[in-house]
Structure formats: C-alpha cells, structure tokens
Length: 215
Figure 1 (cartoon, helix red, strand yellow):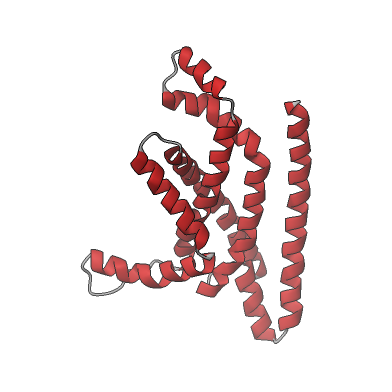
Figure 2: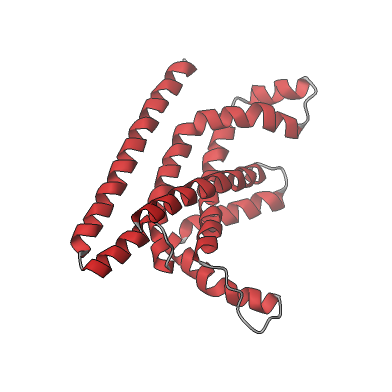
C-alpha cells in the first residue's frame, strides 16, 4: 500500500505540475494579450479557480462530470472517469490558475526592452515569447514555481477523499485496517513534513544562487 501510494503521489505531482505549468503559461499569455476576450476569460478563470477550495473542485468533477457527459453524449448511463483521471484533470485545471499568475508576474518582470530588441531583430511575437521572454520569465520565477509545486505535492493528499490510491489513501487504509489511526496519521504527517522542509531548503538555496547570478 505505502509503496504504491508513494509512487502514485509522485507521478500525480509531476504530471499535474507539468500540465498546470503549460496550461498556466497559456493563460498568462491570454491575460497579457491585447484581445479583451482572451484577457477577460483568463482573468475570470484564474479568479474563479483561486476562489474555490480544491476539495470542492475534486468532488464536483468526480460526481457531476459523469452526469454532464451523459447528457452531452446522450447516453443512458453516466460516463465513469475514475479517481485517477479525475485527480489528474482536476489538479491540472486547478493548479493552472496559480501557475498562470506566477508566469504573468515573471513575464512582466522581464524588461520591455527585451521585447523591443527581439522585434527589431525580426522575430515575430510568438518567437520572441518562446525564445526570449519565457526563458527569462521561468528563470526569474523558478523558486516560486518550485514552491507552488511543493504546495501541489501537499495538496495531492486530498485525492484520498475520492478513493484515490495515493500515499495518504494508503496510510488511511492501513490505519483503518489495523486500528492504528494516531500512529499512521502521525507517520504521514512526519513524511509530508520531511519532504516539504527538504524541498523548501533546496528552493531557498536555488533562490540565493539566482540572486547572486543576477547581480
């Protein structure tokens, strides 16, 4: 149980972090777009997702989406998505809102002269963003991105409420099976604390290196 739960938690964290960053970057570009429709849509999406608790989003998607797909596809039975796929989709959609704000701040932190210089060299807007602006934005916001990933790692513990086979779910099953609730939940708390503190120390070290390199 424990090993399978750890494996799933790590996989979920990596997959949703990458997916959330990609979607979040797209939302950040939409937010900074000159198109009012794209900008307002991105603003509405990020504000909505950040205003709703993650556990509610998990429940909504897990319980309502099968019924919604049933109506849309005109089926006579709900479409079963499963706890694992529900977790991936929900976490990507939810974390994208936070990554979007981080990337927007990173893009805005890059000097406007970089954009002007790239355009003067003949690069198109898309090429400028891809090769000039976004690499600098990611570098500037890397410590914050990693910090958000640590928060995402902690949030994966919510998957057990929809019977996901994550680390917290495995601990919960063992605790109920053996009647050792205090022991097993304390063990889970120590594990999450150890991993989170260790990663936070690495982020602080990286932040200091970036600060020195930027001088």
